[in-house]
Amino acid sequence: MRRIIAAAACVFMLVGLAGCGADDTSNNSGGSNVVTLSPENLISDETASTAAGATLTMSKDGVVKDGNMLTVTYVSNPIGANDSVSVSIEQFSDTLSTSQIWNEYEANRIYRTDMEYIDGIGEDCYIAFPYINIYDRGCYIRISAGSGSDEGQKNMLINLGTAAAIALEAAIPADAVQNGSVIQ
Image 1 (cartoon, helix red, strand yellow):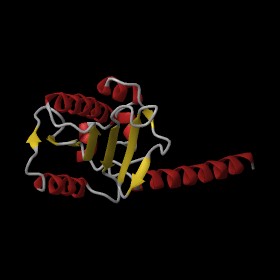
Image 2 (tube, rainbow, N blue to C red):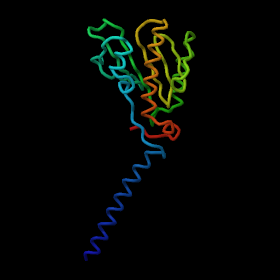
Image 3 (cartoon, rainbow, N blue to C red):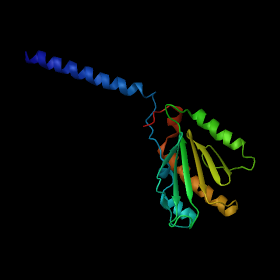
Image 4 (cartoon, one colour):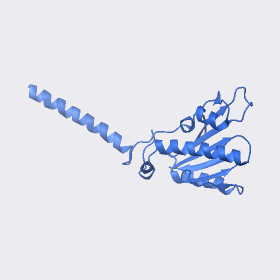
């Protein structure tokens, strides 16, 4: 009798485990899991402060969602005493493909005849003041910092863009985009 009860318990456990495994693999197309990134993970208030040359903190609004884009703005205290830094990210997901994000990135670039390509940041990058726009690993990053359009402003945007691309590439492995990984 003990053997029958033990065998029945094993069968129920195997059925339960098989059910859990089936649910897990049906959501993953063979790639690794990728975390959803938030803009403050790409550029911290400390990094924004260093780039701006002033103490900046996250605005009281925190991270704001606008459509598929998440944005954080770092401001001075008092507000307006120094230029703010704004960081946005739009990331691929199970409902938003990398090609849709690329198309949006490219559409924004086409309208900016005053843009300048920047080499060495992400897969594609350009500056169209007051923004640096980066496409990398299925994500669109957009950063604004200040309101100028001189070499100092350009260098600040390049430094912030480089920091954001490094953080993005550390969080999302290159093969995760190619393998259609699940966003968690």
